[in-house]
Length: 615
Image (cartoon, rainbow, N blue to C red; front, side, top):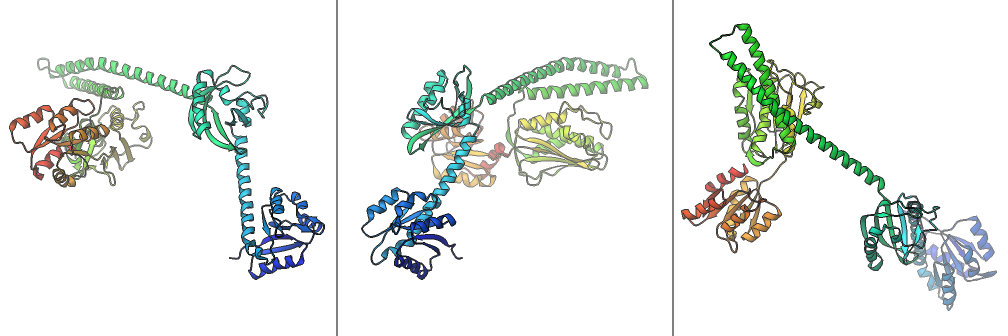
């Protein structure tokens, strides 16, 4: 690709020198478009008619010298040319604005450096233009910035932008009343010394001040303004200075205060509501339970048998009482969850057996309605959840599916594709209406409908399950098409079990690692009790397997130390020992170990014990 031509004005009254420059450019195929001016007058005329990239200006001209025209040339870079021995004139030209100079010599060797000289001049010109554009952009940013931007130098403000002048209460946007004052003078007296101390390192050794919150007091006023300030070192007019940026955060703090107060009011109202619901539910449950008992006694009274119509009325009354008791129980559950009375205790569980336990409670009910209920969760899947709470969620979802399925429908509890830590309950039942889907998990919106066999519900079970899943760090979601069925996804956070191996013997740890490799665990290692204590403090594991004999803090002391601290007392510990004495094993269990394994450890002893903890 051919380089663009450089448009040059050559100002020289010596024809031989002009021809030498033109011939050199032609012979070396330099991309120069050379225009000739033989005098100052000729040069002035051409400068009025054309724009040039660079000017080659000789010193001696017929109607004057190059120094005469140099002050008139403002935008175009000039390379000054002077005869041999006239270096002082070249220096004088540089002081008057020339970019560079060439010293002529009799053999015209100066021509060999001409291309490099012109390239340097043009590069410098481009750099200066880029710098001016950058400075102009920065100046516009500063001028139009809504924040105060000031330059602090030699103990006083030497520049402040219009927004800063307004913030500090100046009578006009030039900030003339502020210039010369220290920025610290505007800091509220309570914060003044602290801010001054923070600014000092910026001025002394070029440090910087990150965002700090403080207050300022403007000129001619008693108002106090909340601000956020930062400072960095800069160069201003070739001298060290500090640039200070101050943002008015009064409105932001007001809004934050209002939001915090609104949040506190909402939380207080929620706590009051939860307490009210809890108290009312407690007070209602006892009389309704008594009422149901009395109705049942009346129904079963053989001494005064009831006729068919009376029994039907009693059946309806008992059904309503049972529904009311169920609703009260679910309200109490939601209240306990919201008030923090229910605290989850997550453990690793086997997903297949967890689902099997939940399904077992409904096999008879599903069979009675002619519904196929199957467990499609594969063996070996691990979940991390509170077993009681999560099984409660699964039971609720399975119960709902049975409620809304007909004879011949199918319910499958399965592991969703691509999800390592979730269980889905999928049915081919009647599905959920589009209008109910968005509100299904909201307790304040009534979405309950009768089941396919007329079963009633409270409408509170799904909101309760949703709350449980949130408490477990997961979520509950649903996909449903009316007339085709539904899929509920109980999604838990994925947690990989972490096991800490504590043994001073590297080969013993290596053996344990080899056995545990198939269980997909994160394995940590410590060589001593002290190292184990430090690692547990940094990131508690889900299980510790420790030898009894350790350097320094031995295995028994390690267990006692961990079990004495609230943060670590719940961590299960399995002891490995070569000591076959019954007293050693009894002591390990007494101080808090959950199990022990004799050394040398074999796979058949280790894996079942570890699976009890990690699933």
